[in-house]
Image (cartoon, rainbow, N blue to C red; front, side, top):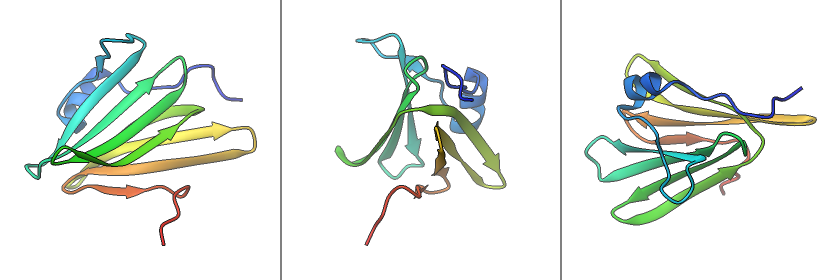
Length: 120
């Protein structure tokens, strides 16, 4: 059975894996946000999350233009990973009868795997 709150990594894990820690949003201190530059490409990935609300928003912006935005509710946990040269984020979603995750690689390049997105 799913918890009423989602699990998130410690600040030190965010710093170790992504190079920066989340900060509370000015307009809503229950929502936290971490901005992660993707190398020196001018691309920035932003992960926002509401722990009590169990929601996550991930956006990618390049040269001032937002080209990806993913929003998920019923998030069980956020995981960070780092192996060999790759580091990134995994978001696990769980609703009754359905579980999935999306994975985004931040380094060495941006790469998104989300089974709920269908691209033709």
